[in-house]
Image (tube, rainbow, N blue to C red; front, side):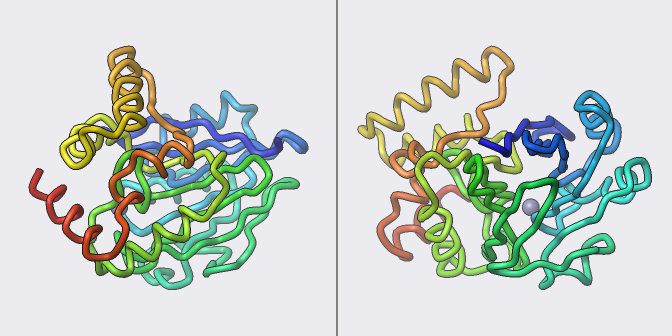
Length: 241
Ligand SMILES: [Zn+2]
């Protein structure tokens, strides 16, 4: 395993992610939206920064990008489609592009739905997925700029990744997501086991992420939805839940 991912809690319920390439010691940060805790996490990891990755344009994912790069000069990668509303990019990325730090390489996956220019990053070495606000544990992002068909298609791409993939999402929404998921699928044993584990972790003040994609495929109602119509119905119900 070369790439490992550690959540950095920021703002009220966001996670930035600190990535380390174990073979080179290189460090990357994903979605730096609050300066002090992120700068502290980079200092604690050895005080080097090799790359900044952005998943989408919302302020709770990008707000401290310039503050972090002023402290640790590093190139910034974000979606080409949203370059006009992101901090200045050194690499404007789109589907299939590669992103590098140290000896680590990620593949860029376009996942419109929550926003038009949402991108996710997948590191095959280490099976780490930076899921942004596309896929959450037991949930998915709201359809702020995209259609149900676009989001369904985006989630299908993520569902095709290896089952051992660690899902590193942008928010700690899992406990609320579990309540909704149980209302959709109350007899799902895998979901019930996950919901109990999530409750234990949150009661202990621990993050529920990353989660395993194989578990999400069994329990996440937005990944188990068999077609766009079912997905759209569940997403609309979740918005009112
Ligand atoms: Zn967002």
